Image (cartoon, rainbow, N blue to C red; front, side):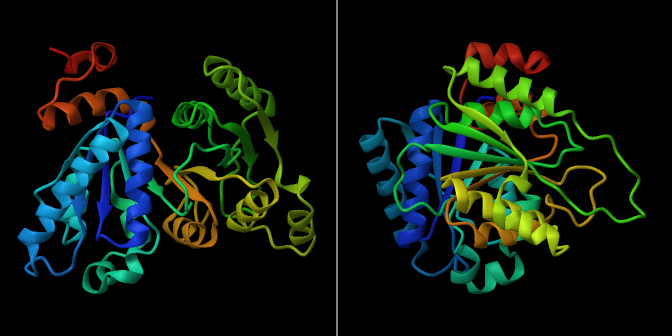
Length: 309
């Protein structure tokens, strides 16, 4: 996993500024370009002044974090604008209250729609301090192969401990049964990823190890979001990672409603990764960097195969 370009949104509010600081820290950690875009539902209102302020803020972040950062001269006034800008990014960073603050734009494009439609991973920032993540909780459905997601989570914050949570879900009788990924395969994938990143600590967890989740299960309330919220509250993770839109799952942990409930219920940052994004991440990153007028690193060009010149 290589993050070459990060897009962060701001309206100059306190919450958005937290997201900018997190985005800048990640850009420094990954050697990525940071682009900052102005988000507004009133594009004609003092737009030139706001874009000038945006450029100054990007320059400030570049100096403070020793990164390459620039303000986008194209503001985001619609979901289509956001999707277009996100196509040139490996990661979108925003704060969870954007859909409450922005009237017209976010009534037409609430947070679940944004998360569901943007083509890159989305980081929703809640933590008040942008220090390195100490504990990462990765949640996955046991019928979906989690190995790429495990590697992505391991690379995202290499100094963080990692807990992998196998979500339990009540499936309807109409759903075709699918084989569960063996626990041993998941453990091996986590162990390999952790070894590559300095042998940091990890553990593989079932939700029923948590007393509150056991109680909910006994009451017949098998809810994926509740399992994740309970586990995060129990272990104090400051980052939760999950995939979204996995195939053949209906009304499960990886849909828009899941994203909205999780983003609003968690007391920590949330990273949602599109299903299938990781399969072509290197090729997509090469194309994105060239779209931004930048030449990707040699290793990334090689990984991109036919996209390399």
